[in-house]
Length: 416
Image: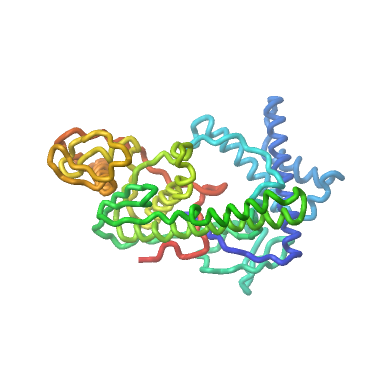
């Protein structure tokens, strides 16, 4: 399978200037492609990809208005055309139902004020030199902080500049991960805010609350930014301080999620998680806490690593009443407000911790669905009323323009 390996790079001031030109040229070509395709679609004219590329790159270089496109590597401009084509194709495939997953909107024009600037190069536009530096066409040899070796020769690289002014190189490589040795343990996970995760085996993961802990520092930096005059150099410096503070929070959350998701996958043969509607919960009064928790990112990491390392991952339907069912006798006891953290079953008298009971029910429902999907005659206990479990086939999470999982320059999964 294909993976992205991302590393920090440190271009010199001259290389940063050249990269800024490349970002700008790629942005202009991308926007020109979108504009031409929109005009052609409105006029009812069909244009081939080759015709669009010739118009926005080859012909544009010969005009006085776009002559500066020749200052950057041609592979950057060609890949910008390919990105625009893919964006349009994904949109139309999403409208027709050919593209799986949630609906995607129409591609938008890129701006120089975007927080993230990127260029993409294929094999003829970059190479890794024997001295460990990354050669980028018309930019030169860029220093790379290699935290781990690449498993194979990369097929493409994306140079990224984020809002904090940091530069990254994201390589696409082919990997052949070997499955981990089988283990007997299985676990159901109930995700929450006060406690990030409660597992069916009784283990808990406390909520780190990275954003909440950094709120004071972020608030101070944001206040300083709001008082700077627009267009001044001091405002640019203040904006960078805010961006770097947010980047530290984001990086800490991602690193934490990588470590815990890896530990869960290594210790369990099968993992069952409730399919939470994060987008819906993010529209409630708990929005900041929901975003800070990072449930979606954590679940996606567990799913990706399970697929890579031979583990089983199952999502339980979000409407399954895991908090209302007695995990001991299977009786549906009815809804309970969030203030009730412990309750006793009226049928068997068992006393349950709300979250542990929910995790055990998620484990039972997910395991039944998994074994039924494999052809086994397995169902939930028949005693009492059980809510039906409806499970959709799981799909590998996608990230980036090519739908390739990202490995952030460190060993997130150790070989067993």
